[in-house]
Amino acid sequence: EIVLTQSPATLSLSPGERASLSCRTSQTINSNTLAWYQQKPGQPPRLLMNDASNRATGIPARFSGSGSGTDFTLSISSLETEDFAVYYCQQRNSWPLTFGGGTKVEIK
Amino acid sequence: EVQLLESGGGLVQPGGSLRLSCAASGFTFSSYAMNWVRQAPGKGLEWVSSVSGSGDWTSYADSVKGRFTLSRDNSKNTVYLQMNSLRADDTAIYYCVKRGPESGGWGAFDYWGQGTPVTVS
Image (cartoon, rainbow over the protein chains, first blue to last red):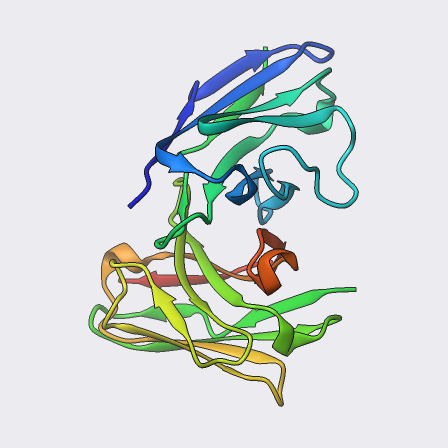
């Protein structure tokens, strides 16, 4: 099983600041198989990045992704109020499909 | 517009059974793998099971293997998750999720239902 470790667990930032979220995998994966999701309280997750670097349909350009091998990053260039949420990475490189534990981006 | 509507959740005693359903619309159902992902109260996301577009291939998390069965009826655009021998640690919101078009319908989880709660107590 591929284990995904997200850091930090909580990120306290102010609107307008840049956020950088890390996702490390326990094995090398194809960057085409790493996705990112956003979840707000009481809502289902929403797909942000189809793979390590491609935004899903309708996702604002302030969200970007990068990385390869075992190290991946989700960046939010300038936080908007609606971006404060929990973010999960997920791999579909191999079964079982696995998620990271999440990073909560909270208002400082 | 893609819609995924789950039903069948509820309160069940340990050892009991439930069958969840997910009615899909707004896309060519048989072309996409369908999945269940769950989230225990206050916890993260856990993949539960996937079924191919044709329904002839399934995969399960170790935590549910042998107890849960995922199937689909492409004539009804519906997937079913039969859950037997339920345990307290199966308590969660269960989300029905569609896979994206990448890799022949095995892409990222691009559409999620609102979820149905299952409580085992």
